[in-house]
Length: 322
Image (cartoon, rainbow, N blue to C red; front, side, top):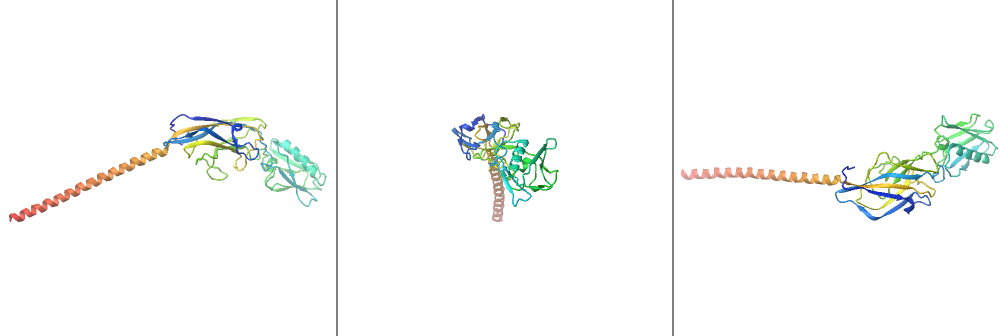
């Protein structure tokens, strides 16, 4: 990114409530801000955009149908097929989700089993037991796509309760379900400076915001280091904003809570202009050098022609004298 500014920055304060919504359904995660007057860079300038700050409501659920992580599939001894439980959407901690799942399991148990969930804060592990494992086993299918397994700390697998020890989670309990960040995207502002690991392609992300753990509250994000994203276009007439999880196809559902972001538009001197000037000067220098070489070559040739002419004249004069 060029570092030489050509003029003052433009600060843009954006509130979600003021945008023309482009969000899916009622997610309130995307919108368009139409500028009253367009922002235009001159021929020798390039535009840059950066996120200065954001105020985000932690109103989105960590478990929901939208997040595709609200299912639990299980069966007990004697069952011919699995039962799939749907956990109500919400923002849970590990004790709350354990309590909900316990209730759902016991309500669906074909053997009137009771279940015990024990969470160890020190090891961040969850233990699940049933009331009569030596007679009735319980098998969980954690391989389904919409599984809540990461909340409970299990890898993708089928695992059974067969002893009084129950089953113990084999990965860290993760109530974020790996959704520990949200991403601010500007889909209509083109750049070739940001790459996403999920696709390996250039991205429209301008900021990654860690999610604060305190639910149902607002948190303020101010990047410790300003990242200025160089834009391809010379003019901005509108700004499209889209807030997603790491996968661009997974929108954040804010449950109609409002958010705010502050952007900065910066004008820099274009490297391309400098390169063009250097190319021009280099080309001009080459042309002058070639012209000098041609002139020198012509002078040398003229000198040789003159020498030959003089020799011819002298020869003829000598012949006349004799």
